[in-house]
Amino acid sequence: MIIVTGGAGFIGSNLVHRLNSAGRSDIVIVDSLLDSAKHANLAGARFIDYFDIDEFLQAMPGLDPVEAVFHQGACAVTTEQDGRYMMENNYSFSKRLLHECLRREIRFIYASSAAVYGHGAEPFRENGSAERPLNVYGFSKLAFDHHVNYCLPRANSPVVGLRYFNVYGPRESHKGDMASVIFKMVRQHQADETLKLFAGSDRFLRDFVHVDDIAAVNLHFLNHDRSGIFNCGTGIARSFLELGELVAGNLEGARIETIEMPARLESQYQRYTCSDNALLRSAGYDGAFRSLEEGVASYVGLLANTHAPLG
Image (cartoon, rainbow, N blue to C red; front, side):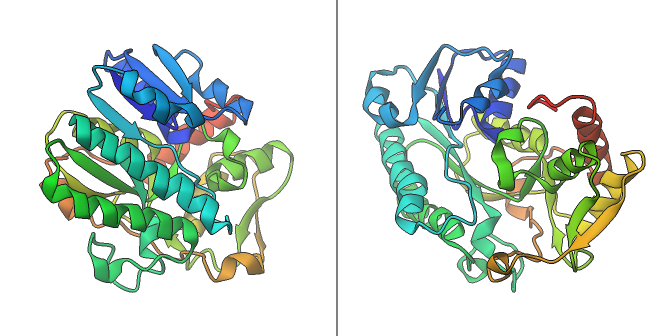
């Protein structure tokens, strides 16, 4: 069987559907449904069991045989200021799950983040000199990456960390402020509002990657015995202004409005990200990442025709 933590969330639910498409339904989903709206992300999904996150670690020893764990669950609120809460969710829980997988020699594939790189004063490569997170979310991800690197020389089963860049796509409606700019802009348009961008968005560049491509990379490592921590983005940085114009171009009558960035975001806002995929390619992943033009057009088309989580 395959375990997916965060399986009702954005990336986790898309991964569950992708596994279903690949013929796998022997899936155990782990999540918290305190936000009950997330259940809609699993509409049509096939799986054999569900555990709340608080009961899972106690239940896991009774699950057998387990082929792989996709650990996608985390506190992903980048503005969260409670460091103890963040470290318990993103570091301590992850560490306990990792060691259970190492003990039982279960393949472990987990979500890291490009937030570990901070302002990107150096190229975004998987090495210490580039890793300078701007917030406790990025620190929690980097701390776990460090622990994984410490454990890797003694691991007898594959362990893979994937540093996701700016992910967008279906099944993110539950994310609130953490939803993609694309999602927010379409909802603004549907409410007869202007599309909002921060002042300076022509200078803020990010690596925007579609969630389907993220799922494809995860499945690659399900089928290949490689270990390590790898960037997971398109390798191309595009400005938020370009992104906004692409969204507006797919919405009749849409107009863009510039607003000031909230002061609370200034010090921890990544103004540039761009994945260096050299290590990912060396690990055998040769899949193409869809262009921003293609990804925006398809996603806006989905969102514009329904309010459902799928888009």
